[in-house]
Image 1 (cartoon, helix red, strand yellow):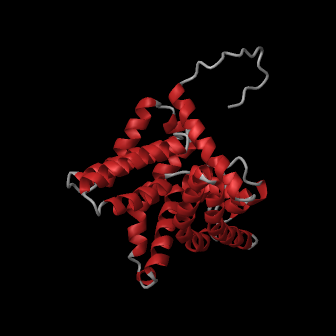
Image 2 (cartoon, rainbow, N blue to C red):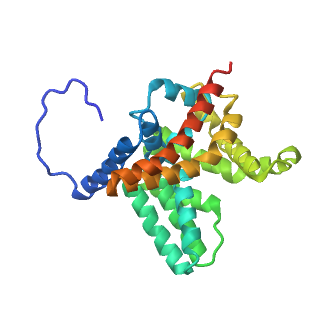
Image 3 (tube, helix red, strand yellow):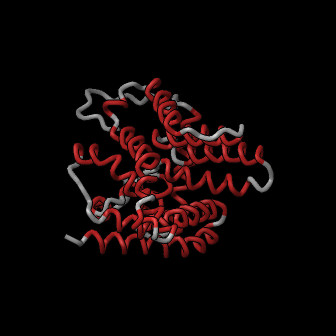
Length: 284
Protein backbone atom coordinates (compact mmCIF):
# COMPACT_ATOMS: atom_id res chain seq x y z
CA UNK A 1 0.00 0.00 0.00
CA UNK A 2 1.02 3.60 -0.45
CA UNK A 3 0.06 6.55 1.75
CA UNK A 4 0.55 9.96 0.15
CA UNK A 5 1.56 12.93 2.34
CA UNK A 6 0.86 11.40 5.78
CA UNK A 7 0.69 13.86 8.68
CA UNK A 8 2.43 11.52 11.11
CA UNK A 9 3.84 7.98 11.04
CA UNK A 10 3.89 6.00 14.28
CA UNK A 11 5.91 2.80 14.76
CA UNK A 12 3.47 0.32 16.30
CA UNK A 13 5.91 -2.56 16.88
CA UNK A 14 5.24 -6.21 16.10
CA UNK A 15 1.56 -6.47 16.98
CA UNK A 16 0.59 -7.86 13.57
CA UNK A 17 -1.09 -11.19 12.89
CA UNK A 18 1.43 -13.99 13.51
CA UNK A 19 -0.24 -16.31 10.98
CA UNK A 20 -0.03 -13.68 8.23
CA UNK A 21 3.58 -13.02 9.23
CA UNK A 22 4.38 -16.73 8.83
CA UNK A 23 2.65 -16.85 5.43
CA UNK A 24 4.72 -13.91 4.13
CA UNK A 25 7.94 -15.45 5.49
CA UNK A 26 7.38 -18.70 3.59
CA UNK A 27 6.61 -16.82 0.35
CA UNK A 28 9.66 -14.58 0.77
CA UNK A 29 11.97 -17.55 1.43
CA UNK A 30 10.75 -19.26 -1.75
CA UNK A 31 11.16 -16.09 -3.83
CA UNK A 32 14.69 -15.55 -2.45
CA UNK A 33 15.54 -19.12 -3.42
CA UNK A 34 14.42 -18.46 -7.01
CA UNK A 35 16.59 -15.33 -7.10
CA UNK A 36 19.64 -17.40 -6.12
CA UNK A 37 19.18 -20.21 -8.66
CA UNK A 38 18.15 -18.09 -11.68
CA UNK A 39 19.50 -14.89 -13.25
CA UNK A 40 17.29 -11.96 -14.22
CA UNK A 41 14.82 -11.56 -15.86
CA UNK A 42 14.25 -15.33 -15.60
CA UNK A 43 14.00 -15.34 -11.78
CA UNK A 44 11.43 -12.53 -11.91
CA UNK A 45 9.42 -14.32 -14.62
CA UNK A 46 9.51 -17.61 -12.70
CA UNK A 47 8.32 -15.84 -9.54
CA UNK A 48 5.55 -14.27 -11.60
CA UNK A 49 4.40 -17.60 -13.04
CA UNK A 50 4.35 -19.40 -9.68
CA UNK A 51 3.68 -16.63 -7.15
CA UNK A 52 2.11 -13.90 -9.28
CA UNK A 53 4.84 -11.47 -8.16
CA UNK A 54 5.32 -8.83 -10.87
CA UNK A 55 7.38 -6.18 -9.08
CA UNK A 56 10.77 -7.33 -10.44
CA UNK A 57 9.70 -8.00 -14.03
CA UNK A 58 11.18 -5.32 -16.36
CA UNK A 59 8.68 -2.82 -17.81
CA UNK A 60 9.75 -3.75 -21.35
CA UNK A 61 8.90 -7.43 -20.76
CA UNK A 62 5.59 -6.54 -19.11
CA UNK A 63 4.74 -4.41 -22.15
CA UNK A 64 5.47 -7.38 -24.42
CA UNK A 65 3.17 -9.63 -22.36
CA UNK A 66 0.44 -6.98 -22.66
CA UNK A 67 0.87 -6.71 -26.43
CA UNK A 68 0.67 -10.49 -26.90
CA UNK A 69 -2.26 -11.08 -24.53
CA UNK A 70 -0.22 -13.37 -22.28
CA UNK A 71 -0.19 -11.33 -19.06
CA UNK A 72 -2.38 -13.98 -17.43
CA UNK A 73 0.58 -16.40 -17.18
CA UNK A 74 2.15 -14.11 -14.56
CA UNK A 75 -1.05 -13.60 -12.61
CA UNK A 76 -1.71 -16.24 -9.98
CA UNK A 77 -5.10 -17.61 -10.88
CA UNK A 78 -7.24 -20.69 -11.03
CA UNK A 79 -5.07 -21.94 -13.87
CA UNK A 80 -1.98 -22.13 -11.63
CA UNK A 81 -3.85 -23.80 -8.79
CA UNK A 82 -5.59 -26.23 -11.15
CA UNK A 83 -2.30 -27.39 -12.70
CA UNK A 84 -0.71 -28.14 -9.33
CA UNK A 85 -3.75 -29.68 -7.64
CA UNK A 86 -4.85 -31.82 -10.60
CA UNK A 87 -1.33 -33.23 -10.89
CA UNK A 88 -1.22 -33.91 -7.14
CA UNK A 89 -4.72 -35.42 -7.13
CA UNK A 90 -3.91 -37.70 -10.07
CA UNK A 91 -0.71 -38.92 -8.41
CA UNK A 92 -2.31 -39.55 -4.98
CA UNK A 93 -5.29 -41.37 -6.55
CA UNK A 94 -2.96 -44.36 -6.93
CA UNK A 95 -3.21 -44.88 -3.17
CA UNK A 96 -6.88 -44.15 -2.44
CA UNK A 97 -9.62 -41.61 -3.05
CA UNK A 98 -9.44 -40.46 0.58
CA UNK A 99 -5.67 -39.87 0.43
CA UNK A 100 -6.12 -38.05 -2.89
CA UNK A 101 -8.77 -35.72 -1.41
CA UNK A 102 -6.99 -34.86 1.84
CA UNK A 103 -3.56 -34.68 0.17
CA UNK A 104 -4.89 -32.29 -2.48
CA UNK A 105 -6.60 -30.24 0.23
CA UNK A 106 -3.25 -29.85 2.02
CA UNK A 107 -1.73 -28.93 -1.36
CA UNK A 108 -4.29 -26.14 -1.81
CA UNK A 109 -3.59 -24.78 1.69
CA UNK A 110 0.17 -24.98 1.07
CA UNK A 111 -0.05 -23.15 -2.27
CA UNK A 112 -2.30 -20.46 -0.76
CA UNK A 113 0.32 -19.90 1.97
CA UNK A 114 3.22 -19.96 -0.52
CA UNK A 115 1.62 -17.24 -2.65
CA UNK A 116 0.85 -14.99 0.32
CA UNK A 117 -2.89 -15.81 0.32
CA UNK A 118 -3.65 -13.26 -2.43
CA UNK A 119 -7.40 -12.93 -3.27
CA UNK A 120 -7.10 -14.61 -6.69
CA UNK A 121 -5.53 -17.71 -5.13
CA UNK A 122 -8.10 -17.73 -2.34
CA UNK A 123 -10.88 -17.74 -4.96
CA UNK A 124 -9.25 -20.53 -6.92
CA UNK A 125 -8.54 -22.46 -3.71
CA UNK A 126 -12.19 -22.33 -2.62
CA UNK A 127 -13.36 -23.40 -6.08
CA UNK A 128 -10.88 -26.29 -6.31
CA UNK A 129 -11.83 -27.44 -2.78
CA UNK A 130 -15.49 -27.62 -3.82
CA UNK A 131 -14.60 -29.48 -7.04
CA UNK A 132 -12.48 -32.00 -5.10
CA UNK A 133 -15.21 -32.43 -2.48
CA UNK A 134 -17.80 -33.15 -5.19
CA UNK A 135 -15.45 -35.72 -6.68
CA UNK A 136 -14.77 -37.24 -3.24
CA UNK A 137 -18.48 -37.81 -2.48
CA UNK A 138 -19.12 -39.09 -6.00
CA UNK A 139 -21.03 -36.09 -7.37
CA UNK A 140 -20.38 -34.35 -10.67
CA UNK A 141 -19.26 -30.73 -10.40
CA UNK A 142 -21.91 -28.32 -11.70
CA UNK A 143 -19.78 -25.29 -12.49
CA UNK A 144 -22.49 -22.60 -12.77
CA UNK A 145 -23.48 -23.26 -9.16
CA UNK A 146 -19.84 -23.48 -8.03
CA UNK A 147 -19.00 -20.15 -9.68
CA UNK A 148 -21.96 -18.45 -8.00
CA UNK A 149 -21.22 -20.09 -4.64
CA UNK A 150 -17.57 -18.99 -4.60
CA UNK A 151 -18.43 -15.46 -5.73
CA UNK A 152 -21.12 -15.22 -3.02
CA UNK A 153 -18.62 -16.30 -0.34
CA UNK A 154 -16.07 -13.69 -1.50
CA UNK A 155 -18.68 -10.90 -1.81
CA UNK A 156 -20.06 -11.76 1.64
CA UNK A 157 -16.68 -10.81 3.16
CA UNK A 158 -16.23 -7.72 0.97
CA UNK A 159 -19.20 -6.50 -1.14
CA UNK A 160 -17.09 -3.75 -2.77
CA UNK A 161 -15.06 -6.23 -4.87
CA UNK A 162 -18.07 -6.78 -7.14
CA UNK A 163 -17.78 -3.19 -8.41
CA UNK A 164 -14.20 -2.11 -7.67
CA UNK A 165 -11.99 -5.21 -8.01
CA UNK A 166 -11.02 -5.75 -11.67
CA UNK A 167 -9.12 -8.91 -10.75
CA UNK A 168 -12.31 -10.37 -9.27
CA UNK A 169 -14.29 -9.53 -12.40
CA UNK A 170 -11.64 -10.90 -14.76
CA UNK A 171 -11.14 -14.19 -12.92
CA UNK A 172 -14.81 -15.10 -12.88
CA UNK A 173 -15.48 -13.96 -16.43
CA UNK A 174 -12.45 -15.95 -17.61
CA UNK A 175 -13.68 -19.04 -15.78
CA UNK A 176 -17.18 -18.54 -17.20
CA UNK A 177 -15.65 -18.29 -20.68
CA UNK A 178 -13.79 -21.56 -20.09
CA UNK A 179 -16.99 -23.33 -18.97
CA UNK A 180 -19.44 -22.02 -21.57
CA UNK A 181 -17.53 -20.69 -24.60
CA UNK A 182 -14.44 -22.95 -24.87
CA UNK A 183 -16.39 -26.21 -25.47
CA UNK A 184 -18.32 -24.56 -28.32
CA UNK A 185 -15.09 -23.35 -29.95
CA UNK A 186 -13.52 -26.79 -29.52
CA UNK A 187 -16.43 -28.36 -31.43
CA UNK A 188 -15.89 -26.24 -34.55
CA UNK A 189 -14.96 -28.60 -37.41
CA UNK A 190 -11.78 -26.72 -38.35
CA UNK A 191 -10.65 -26.64 -34.67
CA UNK A 192 -11.64 -30.24 -33.96
CA UNK A 193 -9.16 -31.51 -36.54
CA UNK A 194 -6.18 -29.98 -34.75
CA UNK A 195 -3.94 -32.05 -32.42
CA UNK A 196 -5.39 -32.30 -28.89
CA UNK A 197 -2.71 -30.13 -27.25
CA UNK A 198 -3.14 -27.27 -29.75
CA UNK A 199 -6.93 -27.65 -29.84
CA UNK A 200 -7.21 -27.42 -26.05
CA UNK A 201 -4.82 -24.47 -25.74
CA UNK A 202 -6.58 -22.54 -28.53
CA UNK A 203 -10.17 -23.20 -27.38
CA UNK A 204 -9.42 -22.42 -23.72
CA UNK A 205 -7.51 -19.27 -24.62
CA UNK A 206 -10.23 -17.98 -26.93
CA UNK A 207 -13.00 -18.87 -24.47
CA UNK A 208 -11.30 -17.01 -21.63
CA UNK A 209 -10.33 -14.06 -23.88
CA UNK A 210 -13.90 -13.63 -25.17
CA UNK A 211 -15.21 -13.81 -21.59
CA UNK A 212 -12.95 -11.03 -20.30
CA UNK A 213 -12.91 -8.89 -23.49
CA UNK A 214 -15.52 -6.28 -22.38
CA UNK A 215 -13.65 -5.65 -19.09
CA UNK A 216 -10.25 -5.48 -20.82
CA UNK A 217 -11.47 -3.01 -23.44
CA UNK A 218 -13.29 -0.85 -20.89
CA UNK A 219 -10.39 -0.67 -18.39
CA UNK A 220 -7.25 -0.99 -20.54
CA UNK A 221 -8.29 -0.37 -24.15
CA UNK A 222 -6.15 -3.29 -25.38
CA UNK A 223 -7.15 -5.98 -27.88
CA UNK A 224 -4.30 -8.31 -28.85
CA UNK A 225 -4.73 -9.93 -32.26
CA UNK A 226 -1.71 -12.22 -31.76
CA UNK A 227 -3.03 -13.53 -28.41
CA UNK A 228 -4.43 -16.82 -29.83
CA UNK A 229 -1.12 -17.71 -31.52
CA UNK A 230 0.96 -16.57 -28.53
CA UNK A 231 -1.11 -18.64 -26.12
CA UNK A 232 -1.02 -21.74 -28.32
CA UNK A 233 2.79 -21.56 -28.33
CA UNK A 234 3.24 -20.65 -24.66
CA UNK A 235 0.45 -22.28 -22.61
CA UNK A 236 1.57 -25.90 -23.12
CA UNK A 237 4.91 -25.02 -21.48
CA UNK A 238 3.46 -23.34 -18.35
CA UNK A 239 2.80 -26.56 -16.44
CA UNK A 240 6.42 -27.66 -17.08
CA UNK A 241 7.71 -24.23 -16.06
CA UNK A 242 5.67 -24.29 -12.86
CA UNK A 243 6.82 -27.80 -11.94
CA UNK A 244 10.52 -27.05 -12.58
CA UNK A 245 10.33 -23.67 -10.83
CA UNK A 246 8.51 -25.17 -7.85
CA UNK A 247 11.04 -28.01 -7.49
CA UNK A 248 13.97 -25.66 -8.09
CA UNK A 249 12.75 -23.17 -5.50
CA UNK A 250 12.16 -25.83 -2.85
CA UNK A 251 15.45 -27.53 -3.76
CA UNK A 252 17.25 -24.21 -3.40
CA UNK A 253 15.88 -23.78 0.13
CA UNK A 254 17.18 -27.24 1.10
CA UNK A 255 20.49 -27.12 -0.82
CA UNK A 256 21.35 -24.26 -3.18
CA UNK A 257 23.39 -26.40 -5.60
CA UNK A 258 20.43 -28.76 -6.10
CA UNK A 259 18.24 -25.75 -6.89
CA UNK A 260 20.77 -24.50 -9.45
CA UNK A 261 20.83 -27.87 -11.26
CA UNK A 262 17.02 -27.90 -11.57
CA UNK A 263 17.20 -24.18 -12.43
CA UNK A 264 19.12 -24.99 -15.65
CA UNK A 265 16.10 -26.88 -17.01
CA UNK A 266 13.71 -24.18 -15.75
CA UNK A 267 15.83 -21.56 -17.56
CA UNK A 268 15.41 -23.37 -20.92
CA UNK A 269 11.59 -23.19 -20.67
CA UNK A 270 11.64 -19.56 -19.47
CA UNK A 271 14.00 -18.59 -22.31
CA UNK A 272 11.56 -20.11 -24.82
CA UNK A 273 8.62 -18.15 -23.33
CA UNK A 274 10.55 -14.86 -23.51
CA UNK A 275 11.74 -15.46 -27.11
CA UNK A 276 8.17 -16.19 -28.31
CA UNK A 277 6.78 -13.16 -26.44
CA UNK A 278 9.48 -10.80 -27.75
CA UNK A 279 9.07 -11.94 -31.36
CA UNK A 280 5.26 -11.80 -31.45
CA UNK A 281 5.13 -8.43 -29.65
CA UNK A 282 7.02 -6.87 -32.58
CA UNK A 283 4.28 -7.78 -35.06
CA UNK A 284 2.23 -4.69 -36.06
